[in-house]
Length: 395
Ligand SMILES: Cc1ncc(COP(=O)(O)O)c(C=O)c1O
Image (cartoon, rainbow, N blue to C red; front, side, top):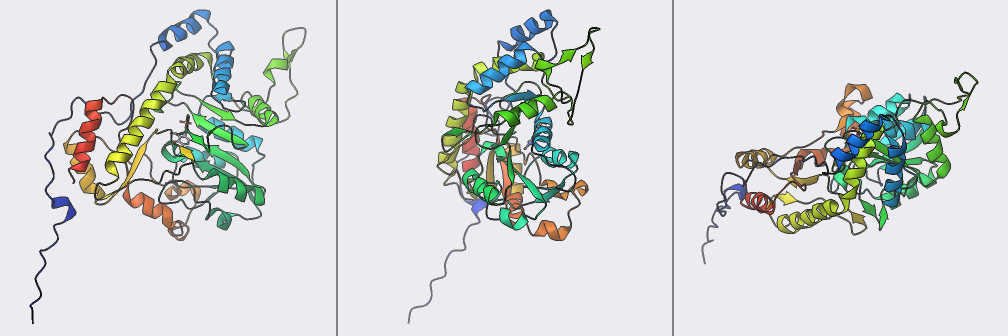
């Protein structure tokens, strides 16, 4: 009879021998990188010299250029929060209505819903992507549901086909919160051309910025016109009539707000748009490289990237085991990491009970392991290599 051979104790993943990597990065690594195109200063100077610093011809030019990017009837506004509020108003959302949204977003998404007087209803996310789970969506629909807001977390398009199908079945308006997703495509079509409303953010740390700004897009010209009126007090600016003393003769019949973009921000946007294509390309190359190099690293799970999705890579999320060790190891090596945002349904303003939150298991799973690593066009090839080697060396 042969005796059982004792197996060597398994070495914990974090203590396996790994190649040593230098402690210091080749130059400071930033988590976010704000890029302002060199041409922006001159464009802004021209606007300032013209003294027309409000909404004017440069905003119109900017909108035309956004349309050339494939965005449907873009209406430039001063933030994505404003864009979401306007989209909800134009969709007819108001007191007594419910709007479904995922908790995996920035609080702005929920605040825009509350600003209309409607109630936020949270649906679960797919823990493999961080995006709204289309299978959970029907469970959240009631006779009061008016709209669903879909967030493309980090720039990864959500499952739009399936979501649009559920929305059609239940007569819901789809509003895309594409704050992270300028440049993303779904089934080859630009995000900003698919749903009744898509809202972008061009805020300071986004991969495409105007300093602050946003846009609402809609394939429906009438909806876009409604948004356009409402971005400036409900006034049709192009056709406003004046009395003989120069006073505006208004007959405003709907709620409008002061949400327009100004020509200074649009000038920054125009300059940044000129060089956006190669910059997006660089991000996509880095995203592909990260995926290729990290897919086999023990303890790392990459978010699922479906073939119909072209990522905009504002963020690069990972799902990692032993996240505290991971974060500490990277910090010791001069590599910043961030969760960026935590689930928003924990904020008392949304009135969710712990039991309601516990139902969202996909969100809990994602939140327990998610962390973002730097991915932007301010990273040199050496920094990228260093970052990947540090992660591959374990934690
Ligand atoms: C998902 C999401 N929605 C909306 C917003 C609000 O954007 P803004 O700052 O342009 O209002 C943000 C801001 O980061 C965001 O991340």
